[in-house]
Image 1 (cartoon, rainbow, N blue to C red):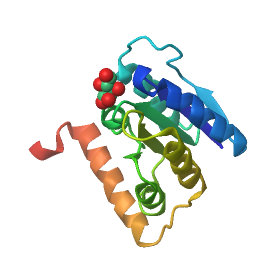
Image 2 (spheres, protein in one colour):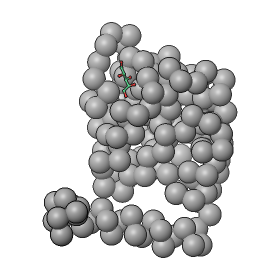
Image 3 (cartoon, protein in one colour):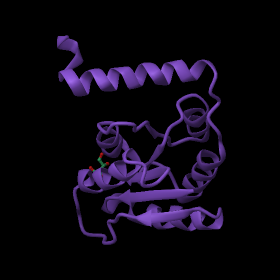
Image 4 (cartoon, rainbow, N blue to C red):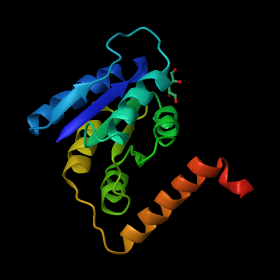
Length: 156
Ligand code: RB5
């Protein structure tokens, strides 16, 4: 699979670890930065990765910041994106089985690198279960369309 990956300074070390795991697994990663330890703004990198996944340039994305929260907020603004902040194995597995998540978000300051690697392996290898979950994803898509065409859906 082609995987876009990005982080801010707080996720840089973990990004390098994750890229090595993806390579071991036979996936191709496209690194959108950052590549420096200097402080940067996570939305700049979250936007690049989310845009690539949203437009279908790559199948999946991985984003890493300090907590994973900022990157999740950014990624879920994009059409077609189902970004899941998973700092544990169970969430990683369920986000694939039930939510068909297409961006994995990790907290570089929350978990250690060994757990992060296991989470990536689980997330990359777990399929979407489909079935009753298809309709729920369709409902998410309808909300997305409504908010894009009408602005804030709470006003409609
Ligand atoms: C950077 O200090 C930090 O705010 C960022 O990495 C992230 O945790 C934001 O959600």
